[in-house]
Length: 350
Image (cartoon, rainbow, N blue to C red):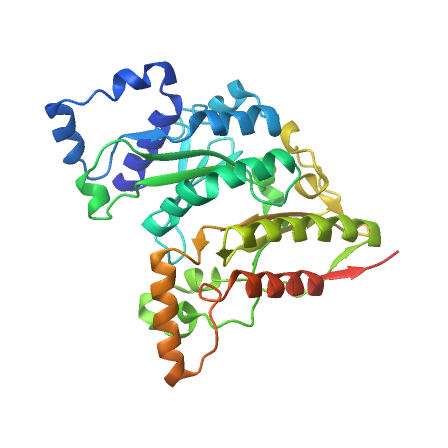
């Protein structure tokens, strides 16, 4: 059962998404009492949509997501999920991010607790992302459908008890749980270049890290993606374009999220996700279907935290000689190693 903190965050997200945007101006009128109650909030804070019209344009005009269906994803099955249609998934990874999913599993909500991440996303990444996705609707970049942030300052966000910003994105595993008996046959891999130094894995004392969390640092795909030359040509072309865009905004540490499931399964894919690598590209031997998206492109080299981390690691490496980290390398070098990794995953047949 979700704890009180997760329920409060879930409720804040839900209210921000279903709030009538026409009344948002009225809701933002400041007065002393409103500001006081808002500031004293620990967990349940007031969130608002940031760049709402921009994301609505992406949803409706680029990805053909029906707006009524989109809103319904956050309000369905009220009696099962605490009245707001959003289910907590827990605190995952080392960044402190909290994850939720909609009751119909179509969308994921990820918190951005680090100021360097949400400020980069809002100030530097959002407009280029919008322009790029309009020109490349079948991009492998995960589709981000909304961005939420705090309306007022609050103790909870200042003390980092509650994340101040959240991104909402597509869930490429949206149909995995339709058949609970076969859900375990789906395989997922969060893939990054492995020839970097990962201090989270190598330095943190074992009592501070669970085996489950350690296993999420990065995965290893020990098989091959078996596809035709024509499939690979299109796959590689899109990956090269996407990573070129990520390099242009100075981003590193992104990953390829690969999904593999038996080809005989016939999951229902939402109509707005009908592209080969979101619906399922079939392997040349007919045994598997693959899905793939690019994730976690929130670490920018020019932000203060990244610059500070780079200095710390360089100083440490004078003694430790552990090698470069994925989050401190250059955007160009990371892209090169990422493309090399992608090449190594594929086996051409036919």
